[in-house]
Length: 450
Image 1 (cartoon, rainbow, N blue to C red):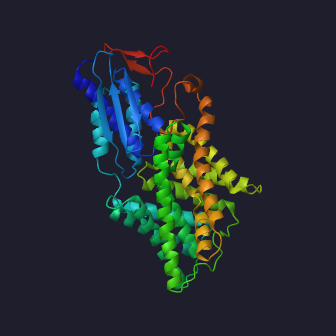
Image 2: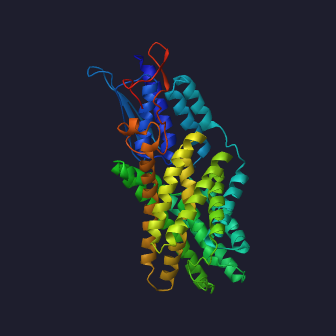
Image 3: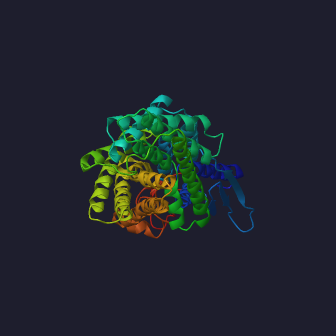
């Protein structure tokens, strides 16, 4: 590949794929490895890539005498679409295994990113409402609470869609938290037979689900401190936005004389673990559906979430701290998702993020805010919520590390992968590649792999 136009076309394809993976929540290590895998599959050598939170760069230099070819692409935040992520993941795998050429891969990628969503927008809003209703069941709410949580979640989605891209993420999160609290204030003012704290908690969990904490922890653990710092800062600001919105709603409730604290904050009142497990499964499946994942992938995410929720309650029943229960459940999610992803031909991230949603510490955050509003000490509850969130992210990455050697090609790849892969191509020991003459040949240990 000596022609400049071929070099630039290959580098541009790698950048576009890396952009899609990064904005979908993939870790910097996965994005870098995938971009290099794409260039190698296209026959380009001497390539290096750099990944930051807002920018991707890639360069190629065939020899010390030749000038380097450098391309840079700015990363812009956009709505997460798991359909695009899955199709891009399959595209990379097909390219690495020589089932498509570079030009065919580029055309497929353009169709993926330019095609309109397969589901009508109103079904996505209903999907988010289903997430809220299922979370209310997981938290111990009845039919009235689930209905209110459904309305709050639909409202959060509509508000986010209306102001998304126009205002910073902090204000979007604050608006969503305020709206969820307003629904709870309305329910309390109407003397509805419902615990308003559960409505607010469900709204908090939905807002937390959109924060890229998973990618931030993966970057921190796999040696990308700059990208990890940027992602963690964004996650912290988004979480503070949620807290600010809920706090504003609680202040409004005090001004209008509505008491949201007549029920103990954070008390679920749920004694049947089966109902909690079913609620977690439905919440994860609905989350996957709302993010435009295929139905079978959403169902698989619900199955993983149900298993994780049952494990969480079992460990918590041993009188261990909630952080340890969250860690155990997250490790299970990481291990199970890694195995199911190959069968579904989908990246593990598509299963992991929905399965984590029911475990997010929405009740702990609400408990801390409610105590602060009453003039009591709620800092410990907020700190516990932060510890739980970190435990979930770190546990998932640990689960990926634990399951990696178990895979058929795990030991062969162990020294070649920078870390557990949440997105991107997973090389196979005997997949087929194109040689320089266009022949298709099996890969060997001497063949450079992704």
